[in-house]
Length: 218
Image (cartoon, rainbow, N blue to C red; front, top):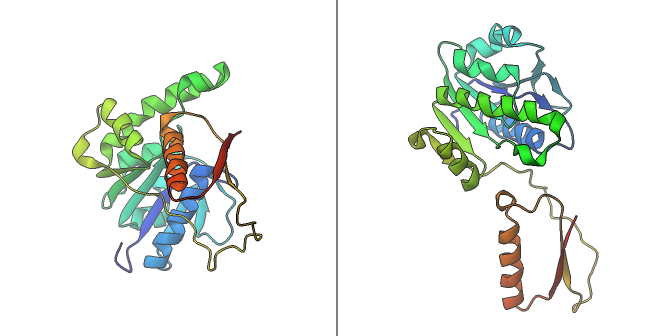
């Protein structure tokens, strides 16, 4: 955890509702803010999360000249798709250590033809990660992806994503003692999504006597 008083600039393209990377960015800002109150600023093209200390910047020059960016002790960049602000990791601010959180890039085969140039630019911009003092990956799969793309393994590690924990557990409707548990998965069935882990977890529940009837995929 960072010491109190540490000034941190967090950079991402967008921070919008109902987006996985945006939710990770927002929770990262909240976590850092709890450790160093009043010293964490999110820089992005747009932020839809109320309560976050954020600055909307429209271009790279605006970001690197912002007083809060220039005064930061640490710079944390999130990356999952190409965006101009990510080039600021090359420049830095002349004083801060540079870190990156890597969320992976969607494979070309899984996007439309119109989106493939964006994926190509995203893969090309991976080179920016070489300027980071350290890169945190969301998963071991993502870490191996970067290793395969030539990044220095000494500066890459995995780090669990921060999550919002409710103050009290949700009150689920009472279930019949014999009612089976049903898991629903929404997403691509690929190794990176951990679908096999879900299957193994259901088998572990069966061994404990929990009736897992089925897994539904949508």
